[in-house]
Length: 565
Image 1 (cartoon, rainbow, N blue to C red):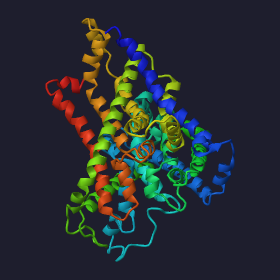
Image 2 (image 1 turned 60 degrees about the vertical axis):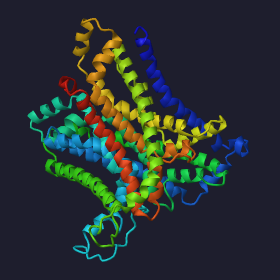
Image 3 (image 1 turned 90 degrees about the horizontal axis):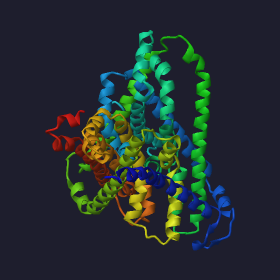
Image 4 (image 1 turned 90 degrees about the vertical axis):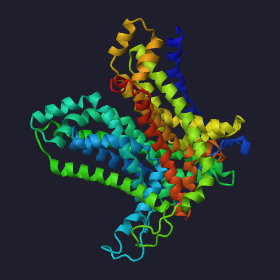
């Protein structure tokens, strides 16, 4: 028991090491091959020749443009939707309803959502079928390119669908910190309309608190691989997809070009973040007069309607895409323009089940291991913070977001190079540690607010009865935090299930998971089999959230005060 406090205090440093060392080592590992130094492949001298090869690559400018525009446009649209929704529906039943939907929406992996969007909006997708032959008059699928449009609109739609729930979760967690309720009520008491009150009284205090999550969204969108492979254009593709193709090229000399492209991707992401930062300064300068003016209403009905419509559209798109997946997985015969398949059949599921065993097992085991490690480090770090009675330092929060802000394609390829040079075999352990890099930040963000806001009087009462710090932790704080801990674990597990690039690179393609199989199948022609794998990819996180809701009620059914302290 006496060792409890010193042991706990070392855990934050372990967490920081897990988040920072692989990123720093990966960037170092990709820098040397980009400059021509990789003795294992005959690179024994520094050279810029591979950069010249990269610059001469046809379509490179379009690759950069797609990555940059996808990162900025999807982040801007997602942030606008979230802020308009919060402004229009703060302290209403609609916000309470959306709060309940957040966990299921976050549980949808990116690849599954992208496949569903493709099935919904493709020329022969569910949306076209519901409009055919009346009122569209289409007897054959319309002639438009989706997914894969050259402007990247499909890619942006797919990214927005997943970014809105994340930014909404981060915003809801930050609202109490900026005293949003008190600010909003004061502004309303002065006669300000709801959206105007939110924009003038709450948003200036809220935005600095969600700046890092927004940067993480920009970095993710500008360097995403799996959504871009499913919904993005292919000739040329976004830069991150091209990097992965060059990494897997049979010509090993392309590894040097891939390293240079990975660093270029880092530069593109930094450029996107820099442009966003400049936009922040511009908006702050232009809006200063509007914020200090006394205008009580500025088109509130229009903005409120836009916020509600955009949120509804996002939910409908995600719901419609999931419905399309279900229908295609059960379709025996579904000619265009029939709205529904007829007859329905389980043949696709029966044919897929034998091949599902290994990906399903690997996905579950890797997800449980990565989530368990992340949960251990998160709880330990928060407990150490509690014992010190001091909040997280600014540098520690920056490290927390490091794997989310630095493009994975930039440092994971470098980690692969270091792994090869160190003689470490690719496999499950490397994949688990790589997944933990991305799971840990989400687990921490999901649990931190509940841990920090736990009523300290419970611990004070237990301490007055003679309980030690270890006893307080095991017998008071952990039972009271059962629901938030299990919810954070469910979020972490869903993040692990959706990881594509870490699985592909750190296992050298030797481990198959539901996500790697679903992304591979998405480029094929069998929609039924693709739908089955995408739905299985959804079912695992859904099961995790169901257990997070059911287990506390089952285990503590005689202790209702623990569930509602």
